[in-house]
Amino acid sequence: MVKLECMFVVLLLMISATLVMLGFTFRSISSSGRYLRFMGYEVNYVRNFTDVDDKIIARAGELGEDPISLSRRFCEEFHRDMGYLHCLPPTVEPRVSDHMPQIVDMIKQILDNGRAYRIEGDVYFSVDEFPQYGRLSGRKLEDNRAGERVAVDSRKKNPADFALWKSAKEGEPFWESPWGPGRPGWHIECSAMSAAYLGYSFDIHGGGMDLIFPHHENEIAQSCAACDKSNISYWIHNGFVTIDSLKMSKSLGNFFTIRQVIELHHPLALRLFLIGTHYRSPINYSDVLLESASDRAYYIYQTLQDCEEVAGQQLDPSQKENIPTEIVDCIKKFNDVFLTSMSEDLHSPVVLSALSEPLKTANDLLHTRKGKKQGMRIQSLAALEKTVRNVLNILGLMPTSYHEVLQQLREKALKRAKLTEDQVLEKIQERNAARKNKEYERSDAIRKDLSTLGIALMDTPNSTTWRPAVPLAMQEQCVPES
Image (cartoon, rainbow, N blue to C red; front, side, top):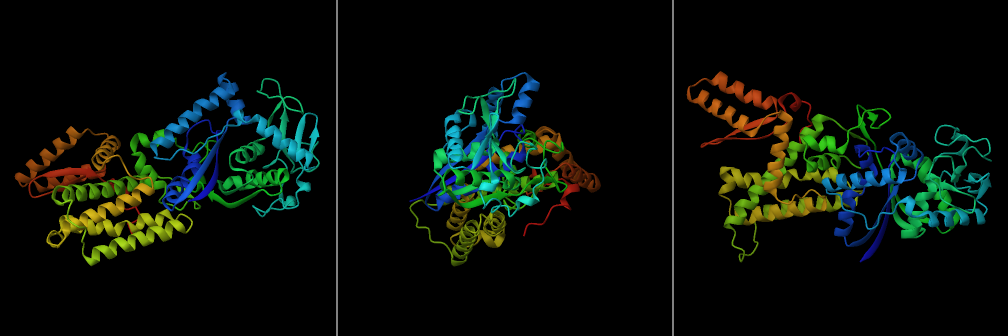
């Protein structure tokens, strides 16, 4: 078993659990952790919390609360949100406030190596002492303008120099150090904690695309300044969550919390929506796309439940799994796409698109006249369900039970439609009466009214049932399933 070591960063600057935070803790690591373990790697996953920061201190001051207490409270909220979305917990989850000795030790190393300097209780990293500065982002020092991504301070030797240690200010939390009381700069925190748990060289470092510069650039510089053998094999950066092509952020006021979204949409539908875009690409949040993901989730789980029910009731466990060649080929093709796509920079959208074929094949066997007559039908359904289930499990999309998730998806759809199930059943009875009396215009109007609200009626020879659907007005905006 090969050991794989990963580092991801969580910033508590937002002071709320938002979709923005999913960028580096969800889209790039959520499915990859399960996939890497599936491939036989022993994954050592470190996810650190920045719980000491200018904005956190400012927010705590507004609320009259201790900054560390505030941070810990929102760490717990974050954990709950990650649980809702089926995100695996990290191997270890260090916090800045618990690692001051390690941070101070790393700053000492950098000073001893002549890569930093002291000014009146502050310690700054000297970018001029690190000629490789900019190798990750491709930026040159002359491209940096003070006041944009670097703090303005006339005392600095170079405007791009960044703080490793900040002297204490009145009313702010502080820790003792050889340079006087103070607190660490943002960048040094991550380097010190990654070195503590992974060493100076490890496999994967992840984060949002906006962290490439200056944060990750500074991490490289200070880590190499502390230890010249420091190295990270792969940097994984995700695209932004956007609304109308604008980055979702608290400063713009265009963000949604995870709690707000899952109030109306199932967490697994949200997860499906998020991994439906490659992690390096921007993902545009919209009600239409969430409705489409919810509809797709219902279709997937309904198909698998139908497979399970038919195969479970009739399949003899002692019978060998001997299935037709075309089913074998369908399964092999899907598994090949899964392995190839996930191994090629975690292309989860390709895998989700490839789900269409085994699901369509299963539905043909379940519901068409020709499919019901196929030889080894039960064995084929069992094999298809198992194949899809295994992949969904690796993608973190497997519910506790199909029945349970379908019921929850129905409840969310009713909530979005502002209806109760009794009200829907009453409408179905009204429509049945209208059809019996040959009042077809009224019958069609009832169906259309429900469809407008995202409730689709399904007629069978014996009854009419309902299922969630994309609301009629949104259907034209949805991208057809490939």
